[in-house]
Image (cartoon, rainbow, N blue to C red):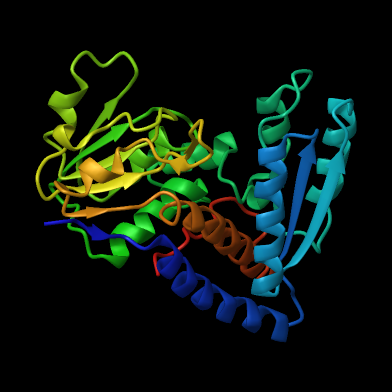
Length: 297
């Protein structure tokens, strides 16, 4: 029997509707949530991601500013613009699209964003807040995964959760979010000696490796919830995830497709963080760190 498909498009639509209502309330108070997106260079994939983010802002009624720099731009120039955006009351969220050209120190650029406008959740203060259980802006992709699990009422307390991948963007924060829900969490890496040993124990399996079809149905516990964060383009042009969907769906209880799974939720949580930041500004709470955690819808 095939697994239940976790429809990221439908969940994203419902989640955005709730946050659009909150944005409408803000606009009635005279505050339009604003997001600034900075992109440097001509990376084709980055341009697609940025275009989708700007489009989503428009659909939500958010103000957006797209700031584009050529590949030859200097880090000093970009840092100066970030500082100006930090001080701009019309902007409540700042996003720097990665990757940056080789002449940039990405960590330094991301740390230049004031934590209260770090709607990507990458600033060390937001990362520290997540690690220590304090409220803050959570990275959008793993946060979107948590919303999907909540939407389907997946029981996490006491569950065996396995995260394959340890990036600062997905793997590490995903593990911390699952741990905060009282799951028993294992993180696997490229050096894990027997990956299948761990994945076969998982009640909830999150895969974020960037390796096409790395996890197969034979590596999944029957009835498990499988979240595929990866998106890869095959030689024939088709997209696939880090999980072999065809074999996995015959074993899993629930599974996300690629595309149409986690992807739509990433942008959704970016919009949610931007609205939340604007709410803090409107309520006069922008001067202090520790913003409210974005609630699950």
